[in-house]
Image (cartoon, rainbow, N blue to C red; front, side, top):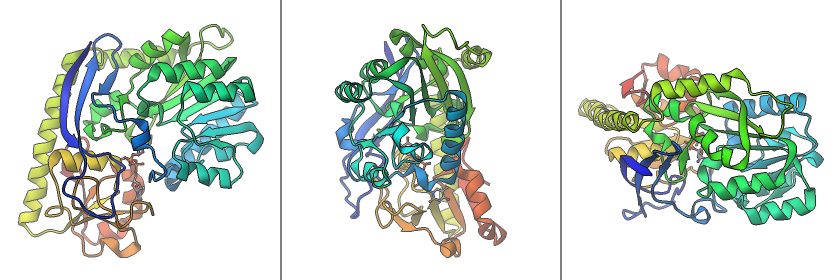
Length: 392
Ligand code: JHZ
């Protein structure tokens, strides 16, 4: 049974950056639920994938140094530990991960054809399809079985999890490995990062919920890693239950205990989180309005999907934040979805006359603070709402 714990109001599609501001940008109610039985956290309204992941999808994994490093390290680890003959990535984006493998040993699946085109151009086999059973059947005919399936920040975006794992089950070899990574629900609650919820993120996984979902497909987690990426993620290493060659490592039980200690299995934990989110909204508005009263110039740094949730939930517009700056060409000269705030191309002197920069990309805080030393030395300051609204 699903029980509601959070209402983030009306939200546009997080990656729908429009060239012209329209006051009636299509928005959808964003409510978050906890499933008392399988402990899965999900959003209520499901927007069809075909409306969100189009041939204009702006998010590019390879534009982030942090993600590039993470994918490079993982590709080395996979080659060394599992020596797969064939690797498949679900949601290969612009090829940031698959490009670390030999072209004949890897295939990507990426429904956003603008992104798939980039990897195809580099010579990597990429299917511009949604991850569905129909595609899995087609791939099975061609490749028989796959030894290693990887997916980062994608499975949480697909509504039909039964179909997702049925398709994986069809393709994964008997001793095959499935590696998935997505933002961690535990980290989200600890950091009060409610902006991990937007229409694309249909689910926010915990070890508890992943375990409950995959057991129906005779799969089990045998290892996991907590990662710093995307504000705290977990990488799950999964095998078939019948594969006795690999032992379940103690850190799986340790993580489960951690999640239970925090109360991820209890509705009340989510109620408390919801109250923290409401407080965070009020305090962020208060902080920003105080600075505006003092005539301070505030901009946004990193036009993230997460920032879209914050702006629309807290009703922040260009009377508070003058503009956002971002390095992604596809976002430049567009508007923050749902708000009349322009996105300006990042350049070196962009922060010159700015007093405060709100960290939309708070998950890259380290990288950004290092890059913007001049701004900080000149007296500029960053604002974050994680774990609570403050000037840093
Ligand atoms: P970033 C996206 O979320 C959407 P977002 C998606 N749904 C998902 O699940 C996650 O990614 C994985 C910019 N930037 O990674 C680049 C600078 O301008 O936090 C990006 O637009 N300067 C697929 O959008 C944005 O910030 C910089 O120095 O929340 C970061 O977006 C840096 C470091 C970043 O993902």
